Image (cartoon, rainbow over all chains, first blue to last red; front, top):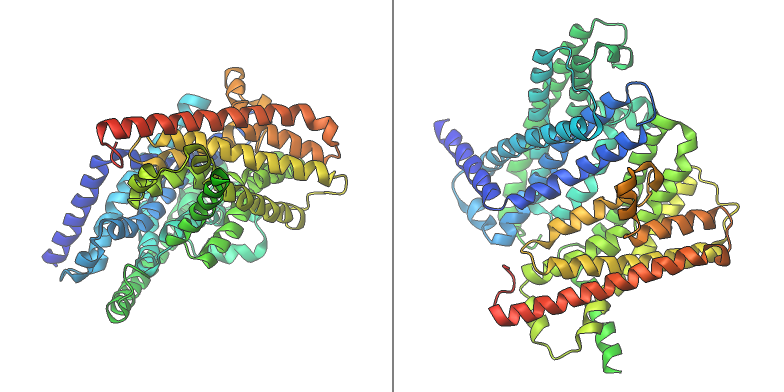
Length: 270
Length: 262
């Protein structure tokens, strides 16, 4: 156990050092959420209603999403470019521990992305950032971050084998923003998209975050008519359950992918 | 004749080079997914905030903007791939004339960008119900062709600028996404703060969107000619500025010996 934690910590530390060595990589991670939030805020500037809540919190969530997804895909691509993926795979440590360490560091940067988007919205568009229930907001935020990271692990496993990880990352980013209803109620989406929204942990996470920010949102929540505090707890329970499933799936996928890569030898030229 | 050969081979190789990291089926998937997903995201945001009236403006805006992924993002990244793949020294030692070499590398992306717009406009019509009944197709085709060409000129300009930095992909991301804010893609340029509106007209896409929307509303080529003339001017200036930046980089690289890691 302690050995696994040591691997996770080392991977976390290396990822942090890479970020500090080349901080310009922050820009690709944050640019899409920043632009999408700016466009949404400009669109609703003359409107009334809960749009600010959706635009700002949605933009922040997208900052976390974008960072985690982008970093998960790019972590593998980066190893391929540097020619170090073979060494990582050949080391006796489990690949999932290495990627988990990176995911924790990505999640941390994701949090800073969210804060950056919120500050830009507050400073540039004078959107109020009052939070009705700061404790539940923080709990929901941290658990959402973990949920996003667990989903990132699933993506990372498939990115090990794909030569097109970077393209996949670019292609998956916006569909996930749509399906999770980051900036609008998922009721607007066609009904056949709803099941996909419900199996995404962040969909429930953003519902809890919105409820914790403003009790007025209760009428648009998944738990209409319920007390906001109880609704937040229900959102969190569903999200934690989904996150546990993500983690289990990621463990199985990593084992399968690692085995396949070793047998077929299609690691770098996949 | 030699200039034309360099232009054509530069165009073909720069396009084929992307398949070193992207397989053709993924290229097609990305083209379909990116076109639809970005448009869908903003259409749903617009629908939520402004209702169904906002859909045509946003869908057409994103359809035309989709060509930026090819003509700006991919064109800027040519510079990045030259650095990452170690081909930049080979490009710089070749005796080939620099102008066709530099401009040619963007040209296939013009056609690739037009394919993206065509797919996106089909999505706009069939998925989001945009009405093309009034469209003057000749005007629309000319406007889109010029937009793709001039935006690739803009991509070359930023690509020329990016030669001077270690990581051009950062610029590719910034300059592809900020078009969504400045060019009237999702809201009219007039909704921006007045000082920022001037910035909008430095991007050829702003003119292209105006002309394309007019064409879809039935405007003739003569109606949109002044806008297209301004767009051509901005595009030409972009290409020449990009070329000058590329030449400056080459001079500096030969003098200092710094190539990939500037």
